[in-house]
Amino acid sequence: MKRWLMAGLTAFGLMAGVQAAQQALPDFTQLVEKEGKAVVNISTTSTVRESGTASGMDDETLEFFRRFGFPVPPGMGRGQPRERQTQSLGSGFIVESNGFILTNAHVVAGANEITVKLTDKRTFKAKVIGSDARTDVALLKIEASGLPKVVIGDVNKLKVGEWVVAIGAPFGLENTVTAGIVSAKGRNLPDENFVPFIQTDAAVNPGNSGGPLFNLNGEVVGINSQIYSRSGGYMGLSFAIPVDVAMKVADELKLHGKIQRARMGVTIQDVSEELAKGFGLAKASGALVNAIEKDGPADKGGIKSGDIILKFNGQPVATSSDLPRLVSSSKPGSKAVIQVWRDKKMHELSMVLGELDQSDKASARREFKGKQPVEDSGRFGLTLQELSPAQLRETGLKFGLLIVEATGAAAKAGLQEGDVIVGMGSQDLTSLNQFKQRLAALKAGESVPLRIVRNGQSLYLMMKTPEK
Image 1 (cartoon, rainbow, N blue to C red):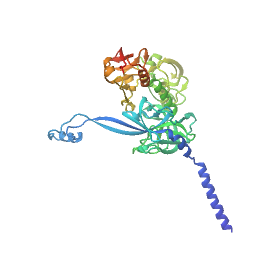
Image 2 (cartoon, rainbow, N blue to C red):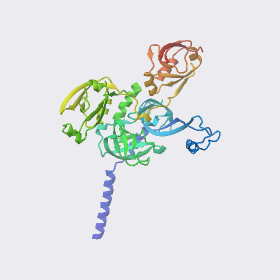
Image 3 (cartoon, helix red, strand yellow):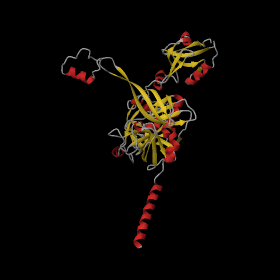
Image 4 (cartoon, rainbow, N blue to C red):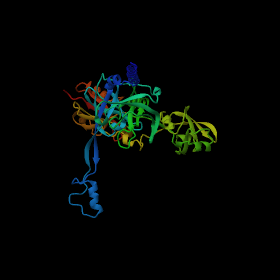
């Protein structure tokens, strides 16, 4: 009897232990069912230009012939560069029900065509509203309405050790769910000065890029962006862009199509314990200035080599990586108050910040270089293409429609291929839809003045609506 009783108690204890363990582990099913509908798959098509030979002989074989003095067979010489189409996959998530989608900039960097697939299997062509290579954030738009959208969370409330869920399309496998915990916050990665990454151990692989990272409340706290890997696959180190950083970038891309960042014009380094002692600083903190751009903002503001910047506009600079984020979040032309440690004393200086150049070697591979979708306005004979963010920066325009082809009424008006339409009458163009709606409202025989830019010069041309 005693033996039976002990066995029963042991079994009961095991069951209780299993139940307790099950209760301790989170259940992701409701989160995935509810929030997963706002996660999308993104596929892109890009054109790659590569060198080739007239016969199809690869460069390595051709070099072998030359290196060892063999004559290159007739017809085997280097030919014209070839173009081939490549495809890549990524993820994204809907942030507004009218079709605005967030993803990584590197997902769409070279795309000529972007296709978004929803969980209900519908597919849409997407256009790039804006792309920021430095933070690796891109904002896309599809023509749809009433779409499910994510809820944006508060990254400041996110804690190390908290459960998180990643949803995306690793290796093209749609709507894949993985889970893990927050391993660290505010991670600094090499050549990534503008993002305090969230590190997790949720499994993220190629194709997950641009997908959301959820907390257990079903709120997006990050965009899955990078992994550390020696093999190319998951090794337990995944990094996400905090959603507050991403949304701030997205809002500015939506308004202006690009990001304006301030700069100081200094080169900085970390302050080690030995350097802190050498400069008479109580603890190792701040950003040590080791070089200054001549006549730059810092130079004009009185900053000197050897200064240790401890505060920027009242915000503490704990490490050198904090300073670029604080400065870049300010507006060019704004005034900044800097607290520096100099000659074993605290000094307060002020300066007017300059504007940071958009080009950057570290993030150049993420620059959007693709072509925006082409729209054909058959009534007027206009084939148009929205200028990309890179083209807008080059031309200094806020928005423009590049004329790919002009026939019919457009050609009669004097419009030419390569012209950029920037306004109608006294109004600036702000979107392709605005232009299309204005043209659609014109009556037969009615004319509209178009402001265009041709070879850097602005001029007006009158385009007449064709008679019916």
